[in-house]
Length: 130
Image (tube, rainbow, N blue to C red; front, top):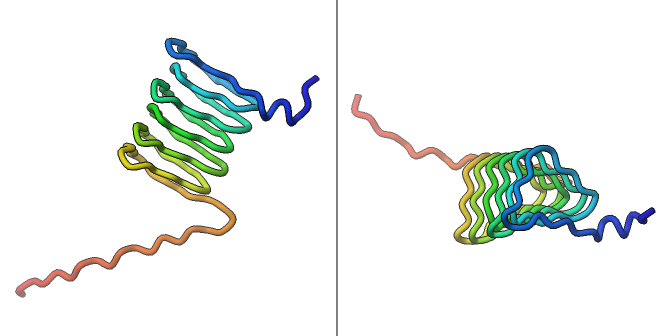
């Protein structure tokens, strides 16, 4: 039986041209260069390569996206959108990095040890002749 440290260093690879439909779970790290249609859950990290696509939800400790994700992403620690990433869906992460050129369309919720307070920008004054 594998120890916990061996499991967390494990890398699972979904290669280009591979399509998986359904729920995929991993105790280690997973790299997607193919296509996943459904739910992806990893105990460690998920990396979506430039040729990778996910249609569905992603949940992991850390998530890095270079390809396309259409669905929600939940990263317990860090979420990275690299320059060629295209993400359509709601995201939740403690830390968020978005490189220049990445495309993101959705809502963002950041969670961590301290609650994030969002202060609205002041609205411009509007003058009317009355």
